[in-house]
Length: 348
Image (cartoon, rainbow, N blue to C red; front, side, top):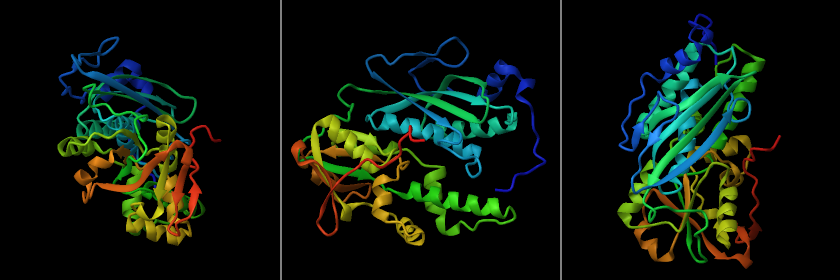
């Protein structure tokens, strides 16, 4: 949290817009066969031949989606790619390209943007996507990042939110809630630092949940794994806004209800310990937290044996007729209507 006051600072005005773009993008390589023309012209050209193109975009705004008091720029660059390619994986598609646009105020020198783009480049390599264009402009205050992700899939592979059927099983990858509690720890330490700038936080006990917040990973393995198991989900979504919100999205678009079982929620032990420390109910965190970037999907009951016992998957509930509603079934076997209390981008 202590800033190095002796860092080199190169003003962006020294390079100009085109010089800046050339400088920041010089290390991006083209690896995807569908990238016909990348950076350097008025538009990129893609050639998917007989594949379907899948496109998603996200906007990340300083002070709304991230806080640079504890978010390193390299991690921010990496995460900004992850949140976008996760949407492509949620369609059961393969991400292939991204565009990157940034707006920066004059408080950011060239070295800061180099850190940001180092993270973007690292994520592009990890997820095997080509950076094919974007834009840079000035901002009155703060940093704004907009990334568009493009992917491909055969039409038969694509999975939407609206295909869930009554009696389908509700499945989640990995564990949930940790990213939210990582954020709570970082916010607490920020407040301590503001009171006493000489204090250095001891974050050893929070390593996993902080990493889930600062540098999450998209589940690129799941598409391959499901294909190998010969399982095609009936519906799918990624968990960005909170489990409850995502379940409600699937239910409303598929015209079904759901029973989500509290005792089945996959929670990391570190999450449980930190919830006790903060005196917060771990179930509330798990269903409302968001930013986990795990995948939530439904499968036919006939496919249960194919995923049973697989450590990547947890069956957390089942779909019901729409008339039965959307419920959380508690450990005491009480049904509580499920509400969307996760992240709302338009909340003030």
